[in-house]
Image (cartoon, rainbow, N blue to C red; front, side):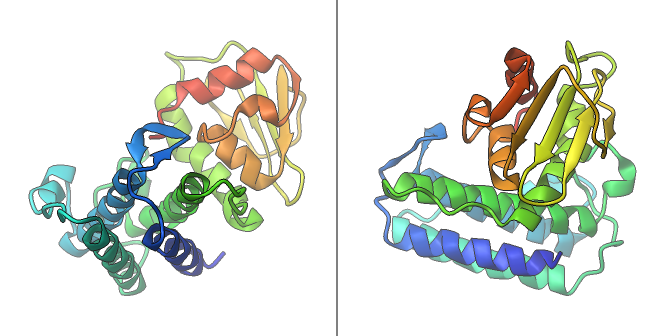
Length: 243
């Protein structure tokens, strides 16, 4: 997968939508945010990781110490955010994946630029869906199946262990299955993930885009094809903070 192409395409769609949007409109899937807050958020995210790469930082505080002031006017926030998309892509284009930097991954082998490159596909894609869902009453475009399937795998590898582990087990096992592209995962009670087909206490089936959006609490997990213990599927989503 060409991660930079996905980041650029989704980022450009995000800022194109932001240009014509009412900044005061709420974001349905993120009730505490307006569109203006969402645009600032993605700009901050892209600024942070570009700066993290450039500084070869070893802590988030090192990056946050240089955080810019938010522009006062919404059009300036959009323009600044668009410049941070370019900033991020330039940083990723010029830096090999194995360069060591700070990341939030528990696995120290993922404290590198490769982690940022992979995760920023998800950031741009999900937030593009967010702003399209907020800016009009039309259905947002789905996330590209290849990008979504990889983002599910990335979610289960790096985000899941924060909420499901030996000390915080699930009450049962979960099987996730993409219906439009290759992608199946079996989640054990203690968070171990096998990329395989197996019978779980609950199975959740859907397009890669819908599965990803369900895991990120953008759409109800119950709106997918849920077979078995639906409360367990909801519990999985609740366990992982994906804000």
